[in-house]
Image: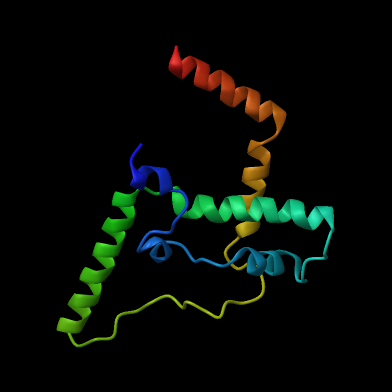
Length: 132
């Protein structure tokens, strides 16, 4: 297994943040609960597991070539704006509001639902059909 393949889920890629707004796990926790986590509270730790998974899913749901293509398109857009002597519009990178303005909770609910036993069994059966 090549070095690049071995580490592909352990490092960020140049351009990952251009398609999705990124916030750290703690910020998402605060956005969703309007409070700081309580030390040793099982429910808080459980929520952090789902937040981390969804944060990683946001980045890793796209291939390297997709990320590179998006980055190239944005750089091209910026160059065209410079040629026209206009300021390119950029999304605000922060600071973000302390609330869930991006509906992150919906993504967590979908992730949690996918782990329910009945959904897991359906997924396994679907995979058996695909592999057969």
